[in-house]
Structure formats: C-alpha cells, structure tokens
Length: 390
Image (cartoon, rainbow, N blue to C red; front, side, top):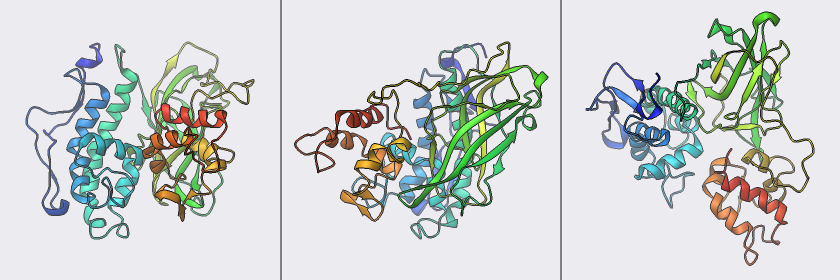
C-alpha cells in the first residue's frame, strides 16, 4: 500500500464484472463479464478519483437510467434532473445532484411512473447498488488518500433503524452507535441528530446535525477522527458533503461536537420507517494528541455583513436564508414560477448558474421587485461558485 494513488487498484471483485445489458425498457437486466481484468474501480491509468467513479457509473446506473427514465428525465422533459441523458457526464452530474438513494427509491416506487417504475426494477436496483455502494466507498477513500502514501484506517458503524416516530415528529432526535461493535479496537460512541426534513411544507428526506464522538472509558487514550460519510440502507449518500472537512481528536468521555458551527446536512430521498443509517469515518485511529480539536471552529466575531467562506443550500432555505426570505414566495411547491421550486435541492442545483445570473442582473433581476443587496447576492454567489453544496 505504499505505492502512489495513481498506481492503486481499489476494488477487486472475485468475478470479472462490469458491462450492463438490457432488453426492451430495461427488462432482463444482468451484470455481465467485462473483458480486461477483475478491477472495477481503478486509478491505475492515472485517472482522477472522479474519472474512475464516472466509469463505474457508466457501467451501472447509466444504462439503467437511459433505458428506464429517458422518457421524462432528459433536457426539455417533464422530470426533475436530466440523469436519463445519453451523455454519461451530463447524466452523472444530474444523478449526483439527486443522489443514488432517491433515484433508487423512485425506480422501485409503483406510484412514481408505472409501468417504468415499480417492484419490477427491485432486483436490478439491488444489484446495481451492490456494485455502486462498494465503488462509492473506494471513491470516498480515493478522495481522502489523494497525494497520500498510504490509506487511512477508517471505521464504518453498524446500521441502525431510524427513530420510529420520525414520520410524525419533525424534532431532531439522537441516533447512537457503539463503534466497538464494528471495530473492537475503537472504544468510542458516536451520535448524530436526525429529523425528517420538511422544506416548504413538503417532506424532502432527512436532515442531520451535530455528529459527535466520545470515549467509552476515560482510560482509552485519544483518537483522531477525519471525514464523516453517511450511509442509508447500505448506500453511500455521496451528495452529503457537510462533514467531509471533519478533523478532530477525541480524548474525553464528554461528547465532542465534530461540526460545531456548520450547517445541517440535508439528504434528499423518500423516507421510510425501515431505513437504516450508518456512519463511516475515513480515519479513526489512536493518536498521541490529548486535546479535543473539533473543526471547523466557528468564528465568534464575524462581521454580520461578511460573506461566509462556504454556503449551503440548507442555509439558503432555512429561516432567515436568502432563498427563504426572497425567493420561495414564488418558487415553492404548488407555486413554482417558471417551473423552479427553490425548496428542492436538486432543482436549485441544476438551476444554480441561472439563479446567480438573474440575481445579479439589475435590468432583469430576481426577485422581480428589485435587485437584492450586495451582501445577500454575495451569499448566493458563494454558494454557486463553490459548486452549490447541499
């Protein structure tokens, strides 16, 4: 494992697997053998992490989506997101905005777009996700390891079911994992707060905040934790990037908030009472450090007019956010002017460039009542310029 990242081969499968084949309308889906070896996710040819995962996407989700969803989810079509596009990169960009969890959920939803969606797709979606989930783990590790000489020692928790009353209660509730169950050498307890995300009166998925870690025993030493990923139903929620900058040292039995001062994370999907959640730490290892150092550290004296370094969609639609204050009166469910619902992350991200353009156009501004103050426009500009994070 001492070779450089460009020489690493990340996902080796026992059988040589890759090409996806279909009959009419996606029926008869099978994973067939690929020629050329047994490595599926690979940066051996000098490819970037992104290039490698797009190749996996091209052989898993993309053929299914172009066969099953191209009637709606294409440019000019009635569906949200153009992941049914034949161009792989266009499809992948839209797919990343919506997320594997929601797309998979809708693919097997009998009421979404029958006969194209429903239980008939379950076997195919299960198989696709088995490959996609494994590739996503390697992709996340690839991002962490870029430029490093060796991979980090990560830990993935067991999966636990979401709180039973999330369907009727929109308050945050705490989920707790004993990480020693997954890795006996890591005597830590992890928590995260979760609630059903309701934006504009519509349930959009799950909202997370305040991930934390604490030692189970005071004599257990110190542990370094870096980069938290969230899994739902064994699938990596790759669109949830809020906790990718976590870097903390845990050395006390008092819970350490790993994301103090950051926005909540929003996962767009259709919630189900049987959903199971897991946390993965890209690095979770013993260290000689002794003081908790959660990051990022909130700036207590920030100027109220200063433009933040990062802005998320969750902040924009939260109470007091720019979208909430100035946009959703016209761009919300049931009243989506121009077909744009700015309470929907996927829709907002797809329209991000146009949103920025219109909000800064004094001759044809959004909102139409007049161009917003520079401080407000800069917040939206930052969100767009940073890739429209969720």
